[in-house]
Length: 265
Image (tube, rainbow, N blue to C red; front, side, top):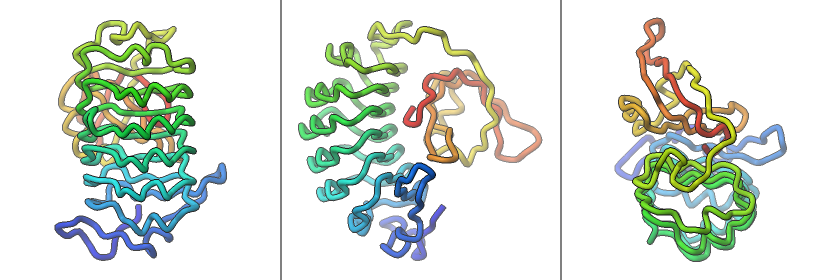
């Protein structure tokens, strides 16, 4: 994982254009990917806006509170991971990223008022993760996202979901656990054809962000774990038990019920 040379100050780790360029990697499927996860970044590095060829950007597990209005300049982005930051709202220019297919905004501080109407332009989105925020409704602009196949709304404040969520034409997977509206059927009348089986995973604590690690002490919460080494994807899992693993320090045996097996869930 790349590390800034200037260390962490009051404004967090400083990422220069040189550092960012060195961290860019080409994925096996030909995507231009930049991973700056878990670096203590507090301010979005504007130097990244010069990397207009980026197709995948991972700024997850940092301390970013605001995205720049110019983020729409990264018009080649298809995959954007901003989970586990401190975002309270989104800029209108995010709607310019019309090629986005995967957007992970989970574990932030987003409210419904923080969503701009321009998000209706993101009609290529197939996966949208809004779990672990402060949402009690969804803005009407999201009704236009009719390409969605996966939607994460878990651990929010929903009492009732908008009707358009129930009729997304291509929606295959939805997670609304941990909301006031959640019932056995997930609160929206959507269930998988098969019940998920319980599995046991050996998870190193370094794979979890600080917030998720704390949640490991409580039953029936969702965490994000690294799922694909190739794409640094994350898997949302419901914890049923957590047990210290005696042979390796910092390692935990977690018994889980798999809820979503896709890269943003």
